[in-house]
Length: 415
Image (tube, rainbow, N blue to C red; front, side):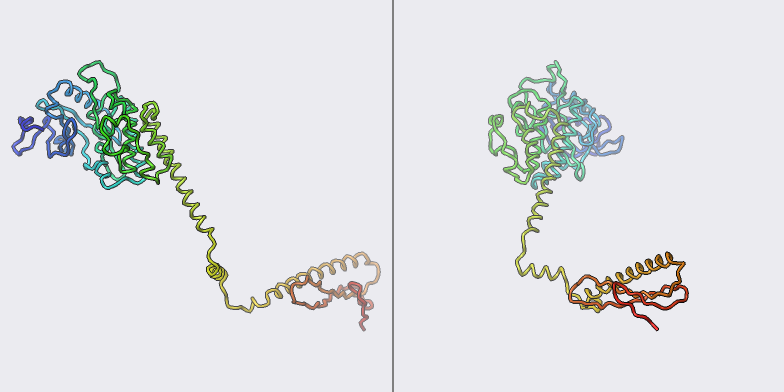
């Protein structure tokens, strides 16, 4: 800013006041139409950033009027991903904007250290598109989306700034607000139709987001370096996956569509592009997870060498000290089966005997001893279990003692 422009408001301590309340501080940066200075709102006691129109431009009636118009439009925007505009004024013939003060780091500073990770770049794109959707609904175009105009507001939080050269979507007949053939913006981030001098549209901002996303993911411009300005309008972008092969094809397709030379081939709105980017990122993450799972399965399916297999088998079935209960486990199980069968046979015989005795109550009965023989189990190995005779006595009226044969055996009379 030229020396002495605001000297009439200079304070004894060397600082300057704008509008009687904003104290100017050191310069933070310069742009095509003005410079940004640190400032402090003395009334609300908060730090702010103040953008002043360049003096040589402030004296041009058309430029000054357009700046004032756009400042008022920008002050209407309220979105968490847009740098807030608090106030607007004119001091000593110089228009100025009072804006939200951020740390000062831009996406351009971050990308100087290399491209972003896939998830971080996707989140950046979604936040920019959400901010643009809000601005477009308010009737505002940005017209200069580039890394230097995207500020870091906190971990994972991005804000789109510098709506100072934005232009209202509403058509105006005021010659002071338009300029035939005037191209406002940074050429490397402008679409072909803008480079050809046609007016900005929503599709122009979509193209700018596409360029920023491409650069955030790859660390490069979409076009070959050294391409002269006249040739940019006819140049095709280098495929994103050529510069970063790990990008999912679905995300590559979204960026490629945003960079289409024909505005009609791009997304119709920022909201539509945000939906496509969100779906593409989810599809890419799912595909990456499936690929990782498939690789793990392939690795686990490869048979190990023979020696390794033997070691694995030994580790799966460790040797334990032989326990007395482990020796002859088959014989022990056989004895359990024999005992169970014997008990079942005994219950059956007793039941039959009781029924038989009940049906012959009128006849004198003798106590009957019914020997039963255990049922031999199926052969299970070399183990042999001897059958043990069991006797069951059914009491009746005194009579001669008789031995009844079981299973066709001969009875033996007891004395």
